[in-house]
Each structure stands twice: as C-alpha cells, then as structure tokens.
Image (cartoon, rainbow, N blue to C red; front, side):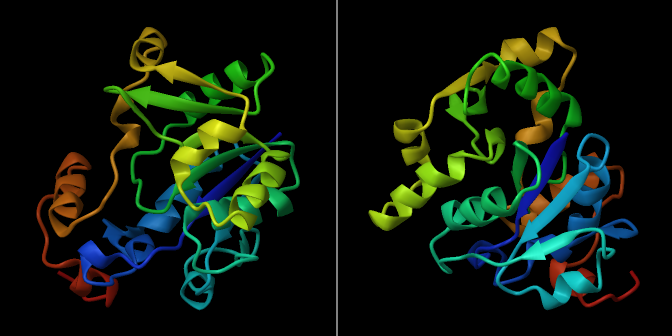
Length: 214
C-alpha cells in the first residue's frame, strides 16, 4: 500500500504568481493529471497546500487536502505534514509542478527502499530529485527536527535520512524514461510541456487558469 503526496505550495514567482497546480493541460488541470497518474499505484492521495479552496473544485472528495503544521517553511514543511498524516508506511512524494510523473519509476524506487532504506531518490544527470522520491512515513520525525533547527533546505534530507539513490542507468535498464523529473518553472516550461503532450502551443497560463476556451 502506498500513499501519494503532492506538495502544492510555493509562490510561483517565475510564473508571476500563477498557481501551477491549476495550469490546464488539455482538458484537465495539472493537479488532476497528477492525481490520475498517482492513482495507478497509490491507494491514498494527499494534497498539501495552505490555500485549499481552489483544489476543492478540482479533485473529488477521496483526495485528502491538508495544510502545513508550520506554514511558509518550504517543501520540507509540506513533506512533514503529508508524511505525518499518511495512512500507509510508504509514500511517493512529488512537487505540484511535475506533469510527467512515472508510476513505474516510483515502483522501482519502492522496491529499492524495501532493501532497508528510509528514502530513495532518483539521480538523473548527476542531480538528486527528492521531490519524485519514495519515503518512509517515519521520515516525518527527522524532517521535524530539521524544521525545529530552522533548516528548510531539501538537501539537508541527505544528512538525516538513511537513503539511497537510483541512477539514470537503473531506470533505463527497466525501460523507464527519465523525463519524469521535468517540472514547470516558467511559462516557457509550460509551453514545452504542452508540446510534449501533443497539445501544441496555447496562450498564457493566466488565460488557461481563468478557464477561457482557446
């Protein structure tokens, strides 16, 4: 059994404050796409956000929407809340701006975690991606200690968790495309994602979020 946790916080400064979770990808919002993909392997989905109202109109009541225990402390705060309230021992934690989530990659990392680790991260092109990682629910205690020490850096997870990495070659050996790490940070990223999904180039994210038909 696996919990899926989407961290839907952040100020989206490079997207002029737009809520990236609500960007439209064809006929569904990004958050709807993420929930749909994660349900392939997750029996529980949690969205962590301090602005829950917009999500109530986008997801059904089976999706749990929770808030941070300590607001405005970045993704570690969201991870702490999600893991603390997760019903299952293992959780797949992702950022809300990732449109190409890979259940296959998550399953591979989950198998690696069961070898005796608290967390498993992808390492792609030399970089770690903790926000497409698999975590033990008990990691919440370590994250809380970081927050109490005013440490909000994602990289600090490497100091307090018993973790391992899964390399690009490991994913490729299992036939998994590593494009799952792609995220939408800018408007150009958004248009690239649309193109990769075969949806072409559309107008601004602002128009998409406002529900205008293009």
